[in-house]
Image (cartoon, rainbow, N blue to C red; front, side, top):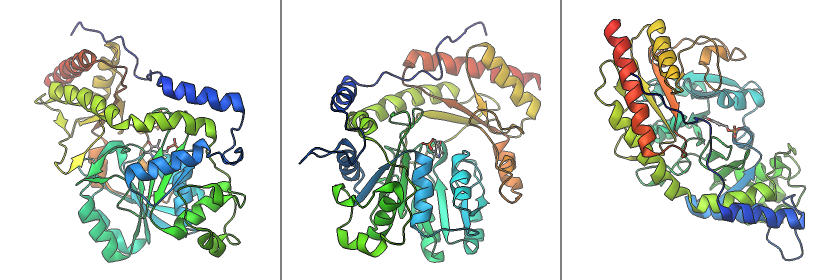
Length: 397
Ligand SMILES: *Cc1c(COP(=O)(O)O)cnc(C)c1O
């Protein structure tokens, strides 16, 4: 293979002009704090919340400082506290167990299947171990959400959804984040909308919404929200809910509103790239493509494939050969956490747990980011490189 890809795996697109204009307006008037509004003015943050609630069909929405903050706030708002156990995915990223640890609770890991979704059989077995599931739709793979909700409803488990990779996705027509009690989204640069940092929180439960707004640091100014429950709900929670500041500001909200309006067009662009990559990788000997279920509308902002039952050395060889050809792959099987990849056994603040079936799958997961700055030709070239290097290592092994 003599080809070399020269694009960047971490280069984002510029923000749309409408976002830049909106940011300039906020900077010119200087009212960046969400509650700093002129007489009669509706702040950018309150408008963002109202629009996102409508977009996903939720009653209530709160914009916050990060996706991780939204998740920790959700845990607090549903009543998780020190020493409680919380079920969560073994295959996910560090902010997920981190949100559980941040409220003094303890993660109980649930396994991953070859579809890269939560193992529902393992979940059913562990359903009596916790009252809350922090469900991570890791890398945008949605499990059978109907079955998951059946298991959790039957066991009295409250579901919080981590939709960092599923903003814009849906299961059987229901927007991701709308089956559980709370949906949490990230607006960080590497997710589906980009405000540098930021998070969104949606729910239909008035008390959960009121507690989350109080927690985020509303200084009793909750009446300035446009996607919040009525003041009578705040009367019930306001003296008992601590202020753990993590608000969004009007500058970030201003640049997010035009991006959310473009979200579904961006999803199509991501999926065209994803499908180009997938088609180029299909039928490579030794490589397993992750099939997507029909009920799922996904957002192909990253792609994964499996090198199942390969030796660690052979996987490492593929990664290094692809890197020489300009293709940056990440491996979830590495013993040491590197970049954004880590394994559940590297989160040592959690009690050690053993999931041998998942270990086999994690050891084979290779992951690649799909920035929108890649063209379809770039994606075809990247797939050719991966295919050639995987085949070469497979044949030699
Ligand atoms: C990015 C991410 C988060 C948290 O988002 P931040 O905004 O970075 O706090 C949560 N879960 C997953 C799976 C993520 O990738």
